[in-house]
Image 1: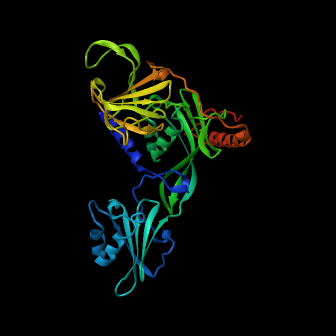
Image 2: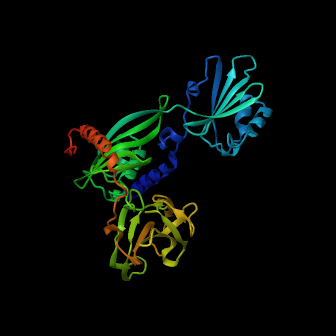
Image 3: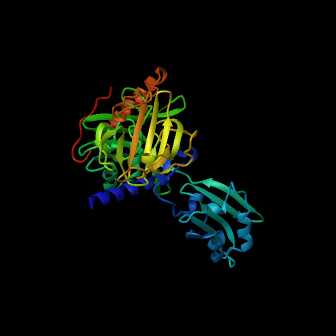
Length: 419
């Protein structure tokens, strides 16, 4: 039972990846945990109480005609709406669960004044009906509130955060910050974390987690610090020594899973029942779990390959290559010659080829030889420059002091002095 519950948690968590949306400059990335917002009419900036309004949630497979005819919108008006520039509004992209909001005059005819389609929690399309039809795109005003959160790991990061009624998307964001330092499949009871982050609101409705500004993660007794800082127009996270947290390769190609088999020169093969080398690292995870490229590179192979099953091989540079075995399917655009970025989804966990169950077998080559990925050391990216060091140190000191003040339960964990 516990195994099935854990798989259910993994599946729910990975489905959250689909809930990440971007809002232009609004915060570069705003992660939303709602599909749409039942809007307060005044957030669109024109509403007055001389108008009546109705909200219609789109049902699966409904057309624009299906949606609007029951509200008395003439067919000729609907036809005009479908003929506008597709860059403004495309009927084919209407999604179930989103809202249409209809504003009518308070007269005997209840004439349509405005129709709004909420494309997502932030963006909308405004149709204004007068002597002619006017169509504009708009964005709701986003308000950001800085929040603090802390927790002690009892099972997984996902479950620890969810148990305190916070969005599990915060776990995804936190794992992204420390993706190069911490093996999140290996976190243990007693590890703890503190985080300062933004939450975005439209009116009184939260639309999700924004940017993490600073974080501390204590793993196996070691403090890992991350501070958001921009230098030379590049956004990055840096540690207490002003080194970038980013490295050439991720710690793992999956989020929140476990190692089921390690690199060894002699292992009893679970299918062949013979002792043979296992020159890779197996990560157990449910079928369909996204697999990420551990680093930038070019796809050399993407094909079914005997016992490897569906297989992707990426060349990162003249020294390093990586391979991903037993995939259920490939990521979008993954084919030989395609360029990939670190963290890009290149496939999904499966059990193709010689495999007894869903998992990812990661292979890693150094100078053409298979090596143990878990024992490799990779240098960090560019550190804070001399020109930015004073500004960074000031920010770091402020954030360390603030993180140290965040309480965890009834007791405070040891603090790192602000250097």
